[in-house]
Image (cartoon, rainbow, N blue to C red; front, side, top):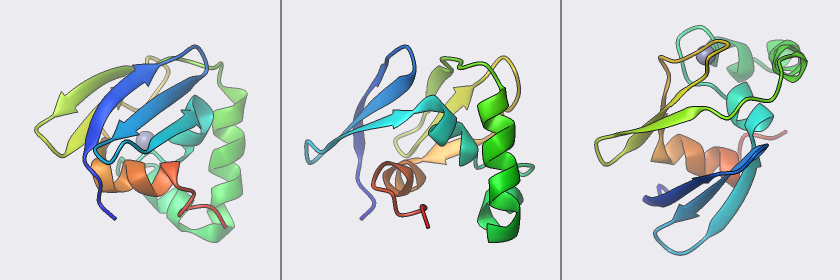
Length: 104
Ligand SMILES: [Zn+2]
């Protein structure tokens, strides 16, 4: 399931992820950001009892297009001016977000 990410396109309110197998997924920035993998955010969305709080925190922020920096061949670092910039979104994690595997 760990697809290779081939292309990232940043639109005004969402990111379009194209994977190696030509699967294309559009993910709103607030969804992407809810699943920030940094050390501060990860424990919040991983815990079903705390996820609602981080979702609401993110929705309160203005919609922001992050900078996207490739990290090797396996991850992307998204840099948000209003917060987290240390998380590495692995392609595996992006696949999980894009395909709704983290929704419940
Ligand atoms: Zn974070």
